[in-house]
Image (cartoon, rainbow, N blue to C red):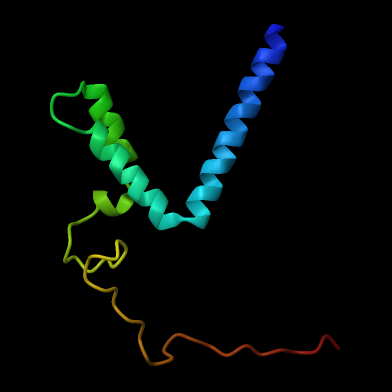
Length: 101
């Protein structure tokens, strides 16, 4: 196997892996967050090297980095529910179509 074929296979493999991860993240967002949180928790344990702990903190999902339960985020399905949208139509304007004459 030549050097070019090896580099080509590595690049194609990285593109396919990245595409699969993006599809997994888009189609199963809660499962991917749970998986990422589990990996981050395993990496960010006491006694691990500093670089591994830093990687674990970097991989931690955004919900886990934000405030804890009770801050009203409503994003982890375990916190307080998100605030409902305002019932009035303040700030909303109806669409108006005009002819191009």
